[in-house]
Image 1 (tube, one colour):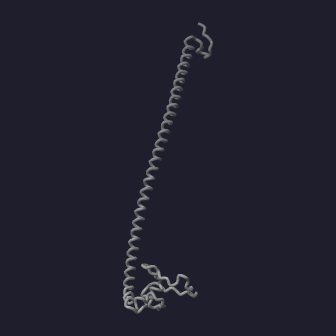
Image 2 (cartoon, one colour):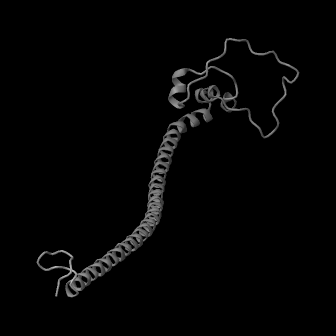
Image 3 (cartoon, one colour):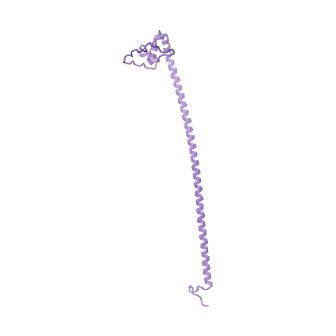
Length: 188
């Protein structure tokens, strides 16, 4: 009789259900049960059991048969074992997630630093090219200024030589009067 107690719909006391199973009983609906239709009385195919509901679990725990007492005695340790295992699995999953997060963070930092190094190398190459180009332009400009100074010096020296030659020629051929300083010719 205890074997079939769990399949019979019978209300189980709430105190027994809360001790044995953590699930609360499902409240009964106020609507009347549906009338049996054309498929009423048909058993489910062999090998399939009807789905187990919380109310059926509470009913099975509240029975007086040998199997219900055995099941009731096993529910407490079984629930504890399941709780311990789920806590263990949750802890392991948390540790793995933390390791994965740490590894991913390290990989992201490494890749970011590699990208920064690559960008820094490109910027350094561009700056070196710009500095080289500016240096070449400064050298070219300096050459042009030095050439201008050299040509200016050459023309200044040429003008000085011409001036000295003109003054010498003027004094030697008597174009200038030494007393008056004018350009009249001396009488000899």
